Length: 283
Length: 207
Ligand SMILES: [Zn+2]
Image 1 (cartoon, rainbow over the protein chains, first blue to last red):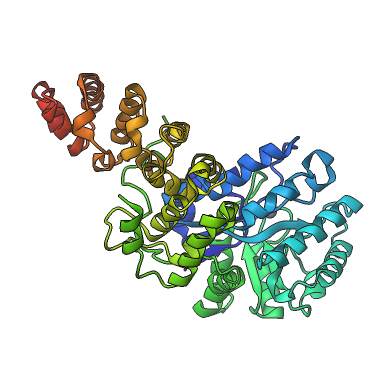
Image 2: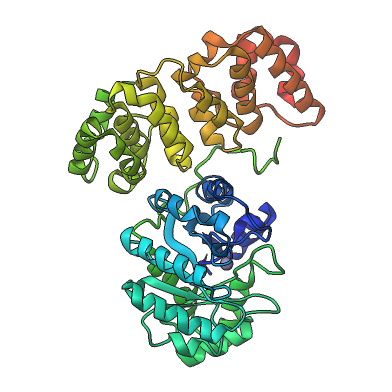
């Protein structure tokens, strides 16, 4: 089973996770820029974060043969902090990078006017840089958040086929299914989705434009739930080809629209020297 | 290495017109390099360059772009592109430094690269431009290569520059490795031999 996790925050995970993910079949990931738990107080700290998403993190992933790409954005939560607004001016530099395959996560947290402004501005950046967009949907007041997000997407003029609306569930899937947008589902313990519920959704709505991710981060989460979902799908009678479509070809097709997804030589040895410093621990 | 050799080695790129246009533009409008530099790999490729072993297509294309800058822009632009570059862009800047009319102005970039844990950056910092690196920092960088498994073949002028102090540092590492029951890389024990410090390290090499 080859797995592309289209939404996982590896910055918050350990090197052991990479090792376990690789062993479970995860061969590519996309890491969206997001909220780190601790509020940031200046744009400069985002620069270091974004640099890590296109520098250190792909190198760390490469040690285990995992291909790492990123999406870059000012996340909705911190869009509410005026100290973080200058981040919007820093984004164009990062949206030119090879490893950046979309603008994201953008969208709503509490649906404030500041979030409206950041969301619209960043959809415009996606259009301007010819990149897809990853839209986070809020945890609270989710259905209205999804409706409002879709309205902003429509207003921006971005092609819905270049938008991934994420963290959907049984209720919100209905709102997005016929919009032409791609649909993301986060398999996440306690909140969001479970493998069993995901199986039912795929039975009902089919596999087209459907993506499954672990959204693993600093919360109680599990980077192997993509694999668990693939196994649950097989047990429920889905074919290997169905599973490959959901867990590999769909994310490849969505992020491939950036023209920057680099999955060549995935079987070649990691682009580094044998016996490198990570496998051996820091100094 | 010279820009002419890089240009000749790049004659097979898939989109030669993009590269030619980019080079012309950088000559007359230096600020344009900010967007052309990250885009170079997408237009030219990332694979190894058959005519120039040790170079990749993107490194060579980006080094050419830097070399095309007007001389008075070279140091500040190299610094900015490194500062805001992803790992591949940083590597290309480091590879380009010996081609640029900048004297020792960009030595701080070498220090930054050597501090990282990205072995590809450490290796790229030890090319010909490292002649501007002070000896103590150079020794530490070579030792870091041995420690992290970077082949010493990446170090420019290794034998010309290796000294007794480096031999002592390598011998101490060999002793630690021996005590831990772990091997030294063969290229490091060979270097110790050449430095005349290998004779009492036979046991370390056998470990
Ligand atoms: Zn997320």
